Length: 480
Image (tube, rainbow, N blue to C red; front, side):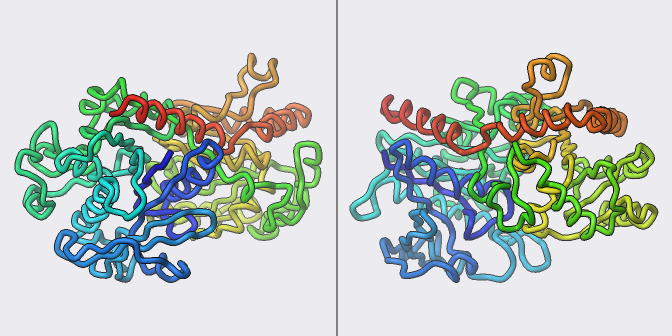
């Protein structure tokens, strides 16, 4: 089966979040299930800099007003189609934001162009290759199925994956003529959304199947609390809605071989974590004692529950724990966490910024990772924690709920518990979870059981890829 994947970011070329991990890892694992994937992405400077010997496969003299070229290249096991359109993508800043952190004002045109190019490839414009199915990711690629509907691509099914419904690609109605869609596309069953143009909304209306990155999140986005205004549209697609949990690259994230980890270990050699624990204490200037080290590796935002972490930091220390934080985000939260570290030298350490090697070492040396997200479509850090024996303490939401088995009496007795869940996401809820963790930590046999069971969890892409391959096959066989 041949699949065209369309994404605004792909690891390891360009990444701002979990979207890149999925679009980079899924195609590689799908090969084991007989799926050949070509991935279309924008030719940002970071992408153009690393690709080698690309081949020109297609030219667009006028892609929504600008020239563009599709280049094909293989990169680290990925078959890539790079949309080289300097007027759209060759600019400073990131994929979506300028150097000052503001949205590019023409983001609508930049990603409509990506979607239009994808629809042309879906229609067979790429010489010698035509996909059996198109898989689009988030609002930046969601117009692909809209173009496929209004400029028909016969019998070609499409799948839209929502990685985070908070990002919807909503623009003023004045941009509609620039999309070059027929007038009747600006309608309730098209891309019109309360008088505006909704990219994600249009994709929800036109894709043959919709997936999210966990079963719980699929249920949550049907509610006003999590649906962000689109719950009504999603409810009309409930029979076509699928929740499929993300995986992680278990070769990159492997405590037995990870080059960043000072002392390698596995489920039967957990004592080797002690050297990594000492390295964490040294980096964050912590007292070198047996108190449990709780870690946070996160964007420091309200959505991630970091205000609650800042508010309970003093109490974690009072309860006998230590806390280390790695991340960046809202200035007020950064300041609050740094202030807590100043109040508790040797017990709290904070590093502002993101440090990929340190994130690996923290998973390998800390005792537990706290993930108190108010909503979390899937989440990856809890999967890394499971893999590394860093016990996850998570909010009962989204993918956190689907991937961490709470250490309640029944789960402990059955020896299937892998972490601690809490709800609601409040200071009281988090402190109760921390107290439970401290209680379990005091019983080394019980704590080791939690670590080992978590490390046995299958967090690879295999199960996810199998489900995607089955979904693809069902859509293609129906001749959608």
